[in-house]
Length: 61
Image 1 (cartoon, rainbow, N blue to C red):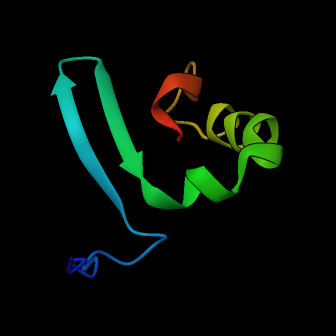
Image 2 (tube, rainbow, N blue to C red):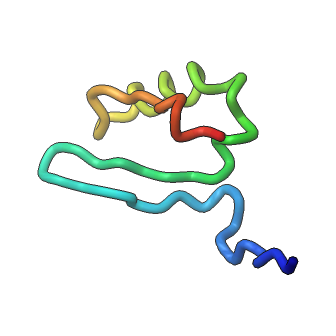
């Protein structure tokens, strides 16, 4: 069986879904950064453009 090599860099984020006032961002690196979830959420919230942030646990495998 051959495995396809991922062409998307590990830390590159992509918009998965967006509607006015809300955006869902995907990033493969979150799988390996579970211990930093709270820090990442806090950093996003401290941004002037973000009111709330949440890293979904079910998406990180």
